[in-house]
Image (cartoon, rainbow, N blue to C red; front, side, top):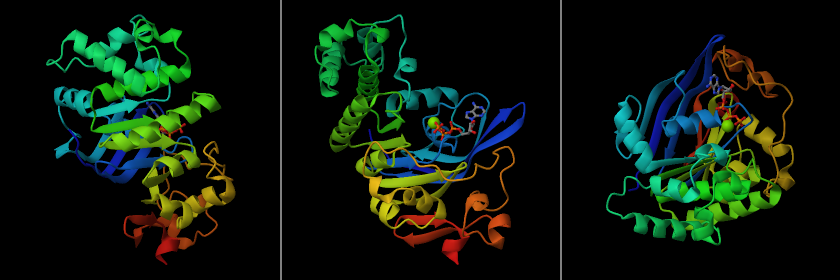
Length: 321
Ligand SMILES: Nc1ncnc2c1ncn2[C@@H]1O[C@H](COP(=O)(O)OP(=O)(O)OP(=O)(O)O)[C@@H](O)[C@H]1O
Ligand SMILES: [Mg+2]
């Protein structure tokens, strides 16, 4: 089943002995079936927190406010049982380290059968046929032999392919890939990106891709959310973000090397300065302390969301002025 996703005014705090970490603040995200959404931003800006919240997999010390409506159901405040049902059937998350997705003492085949436990209409033999077909689909040759393997017997790239196959076996309406290529070497990374690009053509649900790579985002995605210090600072179609960025942070990211962002291996450039503390976020704009266009209101007033064009918006006083 496929459905639309809409998160409104979503905030996540982590309770820690040092105080509350405001990892996500008033984030709005929307996605429709068939869309590939990119989430980009520096390390620690809340990308994993956002997608983990969408997948209902936040740790126990997380506190969520706002709404996440998927296919007409608000996931925030849903009881644990319903959350599990939805998570298993509809929303699949492929993480950065595919090793953690698998049980080390069970064969790949047994685990991929287990992933399909909700398909009571299928016999074990039919489930194995689906697995063989899906493994072939994600580029794993000799599926029968691989099914008899244990997770540690596969290479990192192969494990990531199996993790993607496992996610697809549940027929999710929402597939989230959180930095699916960071643990891989350059060749493997290129292959996984190629696989995701192929899947995007066949998969009619929503795909959300989190990446540090501007090039991955540019190649794979239809629309992009740029995050900074727990907030979405700019959102827009891939062309708007890469060729008509308005937020000074997005501009700084791209200006570091505009010629090279089409290179899919380009990492996020670094901008001078540091992220504000998430224990005590600034009252005004989160980017003000690093922004060369900051003026008085940026320090005290939360920037408005300024619409640039259809589906292109930036949260910035300078853009509003
Ligand atoms: N379980 C947790 N408890 C307390 N703080 C956390 C927890 N998980 C994440 N954080 C903090 O929340 C902030 C956002 O982290 P998050 O992992 O979402 O960022 P990210 O953008 O995914 O970073 P990266 O690019 O390094 O993966 C960081 O300051 C991080 O230290
Ligand atoms: Mg992360």
